[in-house]
Length: 210
Image 1 (cartoon, rainbow, N blue to C red):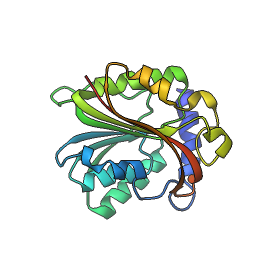
Image 2 (image 1 turned 30 degrees about the vertical axis):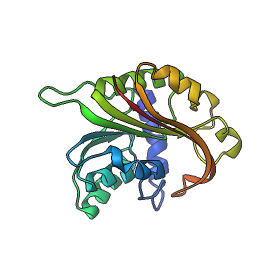
Image 3 (image 1 turned 90 degrees about the horizontal axis):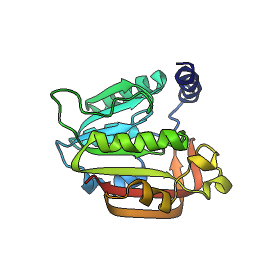
Image 4 (image 1 turned 180 degrees about the horizontal axis):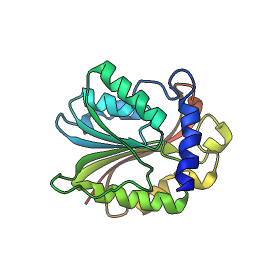
């Protein structure tokens, strides 16, 4: 698992710096779509880093499972959850290794949240998107937030690799058959810790699993 360990070491280095790489407040798109998440909903947070999104959802009464490949990020996330007095079930995993199928005796998730999970090749991304469908119950909601192609010019966050970015046609094709409730691309300022700062090309998808 050299690839996993190499990626984990890179992210441990980033998350090990003083402060919070992406801040402690939820992603602005997630906060603006709060109506998608009801108390008691089972929510999966994908590559959740330091826990800003999972702990916010838990504070709203959701039952949250979150994973990330960085043990440094997960320690910080557990500390943030304790500070906020909420419970989140944290796991260490990459998106490649996560078992998307419901565990025996557990229902599928009501929602999946994937915010700026951009360090995936097209093949890894396709497998991850297929995993979202396995993780969700019929009618369950996906909230996906990512960078669009103009991010290559802004360079205010993200992988800096064009093939890893999202655009509307690619997402419509990837989620054909889903009920797409919202697909929007906007140019706006982000202020998320030191990792996402400045004008950004942001793509937002809200879709329901058939």
